[in-house]
Every structure is written in structure tokens, then in C-alpha cells.
Image 1 (tube, one colour):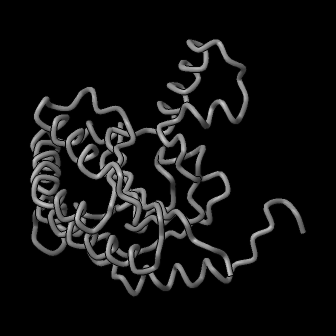
Image 2: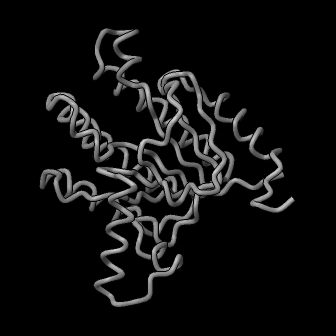
Length: 225
């Protein structure tokens, strides 16, 4: 049985679900938050220690400004309402990505949520915000150059946003799209990838458990026989 320590998820299909069901992409994003809450509870139940969620990519700035603003407001509201509850449940929040372009208000909320939950051990949720794996790797290389240390695999890993976080064993993408979209390209080198046809708001805990069970029974060789 393969242990599952870290699950990464590309939560795709919110906007398309919203158009299909409610004729509003924004309502689809709101519905996606309900699924997030369910998956967090399921991760705790299954004793998974790390959950990385692709919230906003470096490419998502190309979306209409109104939709981007709605997404950031939704994130602000969620963190203001839920950080204390996450803290009580011994859940840690960590932001991976470049938050410099965000508003002062959002940056303060993100930093505060990290600070409040910093010592928690039950589950670490990594929120990938303004995250792009290519930019992350370039940033790591630049840090290595600045530090004047050797270019080794270990040093690149130590200077990624995910430094001190184990690589995901399992990566899930919903939304009927079969690509990684610049998400954890380095870290997912040996992850088992499951592409799901359902849109994120239609992804149930039972779907999640089925994938975990499939993963646990896979034979993983890592280049050996």
C-alpha cells in the first residue's frame, strides 16, 4: 500500500460549471469553495499532511478584470471567515507563489492567516497564488546565483517556494483537461497524475477516496523493475 503524504489539486472547471448550471462563471467559483471545504475535511480524515491547491496561476491575469477581482474578493472573504476555524482545527496555511502584485489588503490578510496558523501540525494547506512553476524555477536559479552556491538538484529544491515541503505523491486535475498548466512541474516529477472529467464543483469526496484507493494499490517502480 502506497502511503499518501501530499496531494496536489488543479481545481479546474469552476467557471464552466457556473455557465452550465447558473449562467455565471463567478457563481461557479463560489460553488468551488464548497468542494474545497469538503476535500480539506476528507484530507484530515485520511491523515494527509499536505494539500496543495492551485488557486490562481500566473496566467490567470489574462482573465477579465471583473472575474479576477471577484476571485480575490472571494479569497479575502474566505480567509477572514475561516482562518480562526482552520487554526482551531490545527490546520496550517502556507502561500506559495509571488504575492507582490496583490493589493495591500489581500497581502495583509494572507500574511496574517499564515502567521495565525504557523504552528499547526494536523494538515498544511499550500495555496498556490500567482503561481507558475517556470517562474518558480527561474526564481530558484536566481537565488542560487545570488547566494553563490553550486547548482545542484538539492539547492534548486531548497530555493523553490516549496522548500521543506515533500513532493506530492498524487496530483489530481478536474475539469476534463489533461495537462499540468505550469503547476508543480519540478515537484510532480514522480507524482501519479489522475485527470478527472468532472468540473471541480461536481467533484465529490467519494471521487477523492476512489483516487486515493487506486493510488494506494499502484505498483510504483521509480525506474526499477
